[in-house]
Length: 143
Image (cartoon, rainbow, N blue to C red; front, side):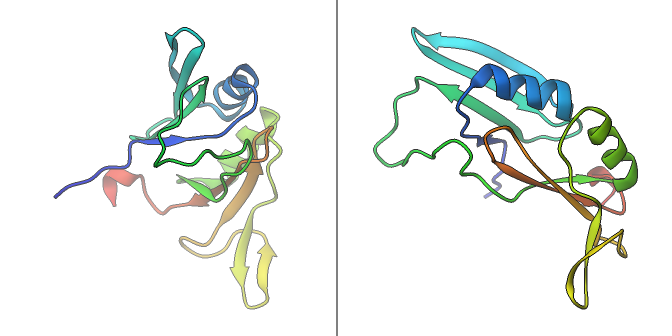
């Protein structure tokens, strides 16, 4: 059975602020911004080149089997890029509060890029949801 991860719900407190951050600062494509029923709004954004999107929601009733997440409670979401230095420069220029490039070394996290698959940077959205950006050796389609 094939399964694909296609949407991750991102808990935020202000949909407009989050949409602006992800679309304008991080560079995600805003695919959808729709009121699906009175008082229920969905905003879907997709990282460039990704088949998985994030969705921001307000006013949606919770299914009893799905507990709610507080804004800022989702952590360690991971994006991959093929040039971490260029991605760092672009995100910084767009105002994203991104950490310096780091790698895992003998003493834990160390400043600067590492070897293949071992260069990372980190940032948080305005609510505190945290992201990791990892350098991959090639685009996903070539791996």
